[in-house]
Length: 455
Image: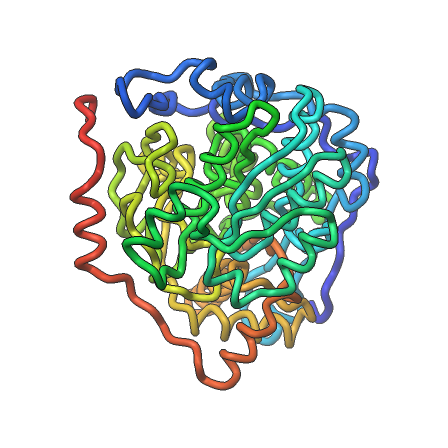
C-alpha cells in the first residue's frame, strides 16, 4: 500500500449512545471515598461540584447512555472524525503491519477533548449553572471547555499549569478568543495556590495543583460547578464515541485491530479509543493487545502504586483508587503537559490490574523523533502527547517487521501540534531533555498516601 487511505462515515452513523465499560467488567470499580469519613461518597457529596446528570453517569453501571440530541448536533460539526490507513508510514518503516489512526485533531479545539467538554457544558447549562471552573495542562482541555462554554453560554475560568502557560501562549489566546479566562497555576487567587507558592515560590505547577484551585473556586459559589477533562468515569464515557466510530470504519476496511495503542496521562483519549474494543472482547469478541504509552517522567501506570489517593494536590477531592505517584508528586516540566498528572483514571487502572491492558513508559526525545517521522510521511504534526501513541505504534510495527507478521495496529492521534511549535523548535535544536522523575520525591509522595483500611 503506497498512499494514505481515509475512511469516512456519514453523519447518520454518528453514535447515538456512549458506551460504559463498567457493565462488562468482571468486577465493579472500587468505590469513591469521602476523605474525612473514608466511607463511600453519596450524590450529595458531589453536588457542590457536578450537576445531577453527570453524577448519575459517574456511578452508572448501564452499558449504554443516550447522547442528548443537542450534544450530537454540536458533535456533527466535526464528527464522525476520519480514520486513516497510514500507508506512507508503513512503507517508510518497511513493515508488514497495517497501521490505522483515528484523527481527533479535526475538532474546533484541535483535539479529542470537546467530546466531553460539549457534553459537560450541556448538562451544566440544563441544570442552571452559570460558570465553570477547570484545570488544564498543555491547554487542549482548557481550549475545549472554552469552546463548549461559548456554545452553551457559560462563563469559563481555566487554571493552566504554569509551565505550559509559559510554553504555550497560543493556547491561552485560543481560550480567550472563545471568551474564557486563563490563569497560571499556582496562582495567588486561591488558598491552595497561595499555599503552594509560599512553600515553592518558583513552582512549575502540576495538574494536581490546578485541580485544587479550580475545585476550591467552584465549591465556594453556588452558581459555579467544576469540570474535569479526564480521569473520572463520566469523562471517559463521553470519549467512547471515538472507538465506536473506529469500529464501524474498520468494518468498512474489512479489518480489525490486533493491537491498539494510546497515549495516557489521565486516561480519557486512551479510554475513548480502547474501551469499545475491550468491551467487545469481554462479551466474547476478539481481544486485541491494548498498550498504554506514558512518559518516563510521569509513569503512573508503570511506576505508580494501585492505591486510594486524592485527585488533587490540595486534598480537596474525594479519594479514588488508581495507579498513582502520590498527590504531592510534581513531574518535571516536559512538553507533553497533558500527561503531567500524578494519577491514572480509576477505570484504566482497574483494567491494568485485571490484565486487560499493558503499559510502557517512553522518553521525550524518542516520542518527538516518532512525531517528526509521522509528519514527514503522513503529513500531520502530532501534539506532544499524541507522539507517545505514535512512538508506541512505530515500535509495534517494527516488531511486526522483525517477526515477519502482518498485524493490524490502531492508534488514536488525539490532537495536532499546531500550538506546540516551540516544543518542535526545542527538539530540532537539541534542547529537549529526557527527564527522569526524582526517585526521592516519588518515594516521599508515595509514603504520604492516605491510609485506607480497605486496602
